[in-house]
Length: 198
Ligand code: AMP
Image (cartoon, rainbow, N blue to C red; front, side, top):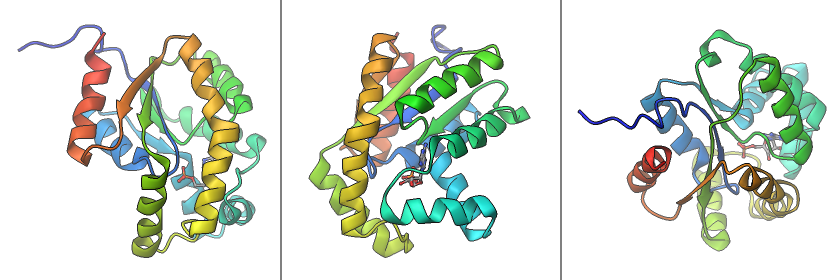
């Protein structure tokens, strides 16, 4: 059996891309293959919204308008999640960090845990296609932030606040780009290859 030695250690990962790029779907698949937890801040917020926790009530107002939940809240939530036992040997963060402040916070959190990121997987997609996918998901899953107006706002917020992160990680030579427009299986294969290609 041939295994890539370079990637036995690539287990501290981010998956990045605009809303609707398929991050959540791919994160779950890849994380399962790597036996690491997929940690989606959006999912954690949604679970809190459903459970009507204090955090959920706060997050809902931002989520429903397509804005980001404040960094201080989000950073604390990720700090405690990454300190859990199952994240000790690796994790795939989906939807975090999303602002430059969150990048700094994550650097701090990982430094406290005496570790650092191995790679940032970037899903590249076409914006108009993504709007179509999200409108459909809104219909199927009844997600209250998947209306066309909110989707457009989320894409704007992504371009303004999240796209700049890619440059930061690019400078650290961590970014691995994958075409997100292919079929779900093909994208999973490309992501796997992107992790073993070095
Ligand atoms: P997602 O499921 O990743 O698309 O996230 C859905 C919504 O949750 C976003 O539009 C934000 O309102 C909120 N959210 C998720 N992750 C973050 C984050 N890292 N920072 C701030 N808000 C977030």
